[in-house]
Amino acid sequence: MSERIIIDMDEVIADTMGKMVSWYENEIGGVVDFDKMTMGRWSNGFPEEHRPMIRQKLHEPGFFRDVPVMEYSQDVLKEMNSRYEIFIVSAAVEFPDSLKDKYEWLMENFPFFTWRQLVLCGDKRMVYGDHMIDDIDRNLNHFKGEKYLFTAPHNKSATGFRRINDWKEAASIFLK
Picture 1 (cartoon, rainbow, N blue to C red):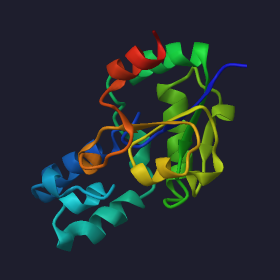
Picture 2 (cartoon, rainbow, N blue to C red; picture 1 turned 90 degrees about the horizontal axis):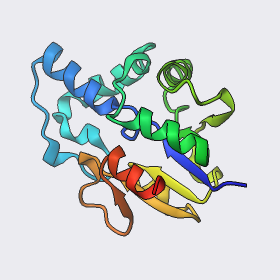
Picture 3 (cartoon, helix red, strand yellow; picture 1 turned 120 degrees about the vertical axis):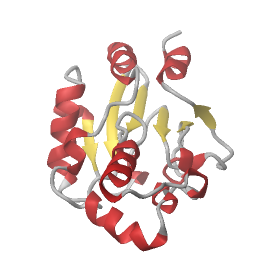
């Protein structure tokens, strides 16, 4: 049996933050402070008075349906999928309307995955594998296998994990 790799969706293969920042800048005319994105929360980069609006936007049906794909993730994951047992795991039930959106997004943008490889859950402590790639350090803390923190503005200060900065770097690790 091949090694199992657990891969997060948002901010790892799906640029959810990028979509939100674009919406906020274009529709609201606001400015995002990337230096304030800390503690695994990219919402901290938005002015405090606008955070409820950001949270509401995440709860809108359809928001997650057309999120941009992270550069090179499709090609790298297609090759990884032929060599490893891959599961895409997203703590999606916090945003119930995202479940259908995320499933359809994944099937459209990563058609080489099957529905059996998608895990939409509330807490990632229940997953296991040999490797896990996530952008939020608290999701990696419990994981027993090799932990990889996918670099994003909200985790720049996190330490104690091997980092992956982009999907070309992931290829250099997993597709040697």
